[in-house]
Image 1: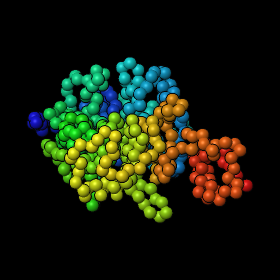
Image 2: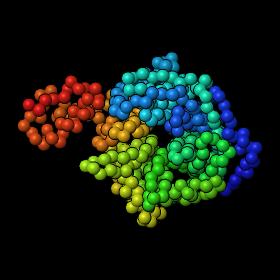
Image 3: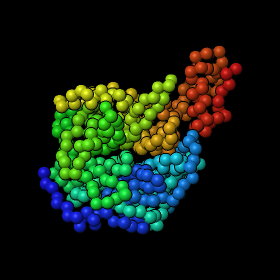
Image 4: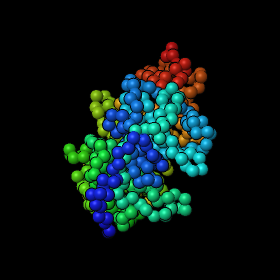
Length: 409
């Protein structure tokens, strides 16, 4: 492994105060403290902390039903073809920030989207910001499959926690898989840790493939980073191991299925019958979504990790629940009760921004079932009236169809 000696002068140059953002690309977004939105710029190998204008606090419960997000955003950029890069909720405001690239040059743009179906473009040139350069960023001109620049994997995910920004991605080192730990407000300190894992599905120790989605969990009172990789090992890493210059081995605790790239992962909680459960939601590009109980991670932490081959198609290590969230590209916590997500509706082939409750994690109007027929009645069926109808009524109201709520008599 080779290491770069970074002088104090280089570190000072890496963290530059600025009063106008000069953002060349956007790969990931993350909401920070106050009015700060973190923007990962892979072309410049920088993370920008953009100061957003103050926003009015919005009560929880606003539902998103934007069923043609692509047209909404494309109109803002002259009708150009767009690609969604990331999404982040600005907590407490009802605003969802969406980063896109558009046109032949893949120019970046950032929008604030609200539940009333409006999108406001953020003027990145005028935005006040500070930024920090990422040490040891990929410098080659190599591309994956002749079209995707290796440098675009400089930041594959970002998460904010207790005054620090955690960023996964690649470096230019021999052990390329990297986790960066950056204090904010940005200063000179930046911890860069290289990571290896054993990938049971590949029967291989991997040092290059980066973390694709990550979140956090407290296990035995100790904070852990929970990381999901392509094809889909799930790995635990104590935050105390993430030190500058360290090379560590994450503990592989699960294999969640081959032939898949994780799209996003968030932490959340649900309360049922007075009992609170802490969970992670992992959404995938090529598989159904996984609901991962933190209790399962706790049990896996106390067992030996996966260090031998796991056959293709076999799920191993933790018991996960499945959620019917096919086509989801990005997900975030909208409020205590709901998610908001950007998804490709596979039945209608439309890009959408929609919200849904955390307890069941599905939308009634995605389906044509027995309940959808005009002559279906709940009358006389106590089970349906007590267990099914109340939830359906909530979903119909949230999804914009209160007029279709059926009477019970």
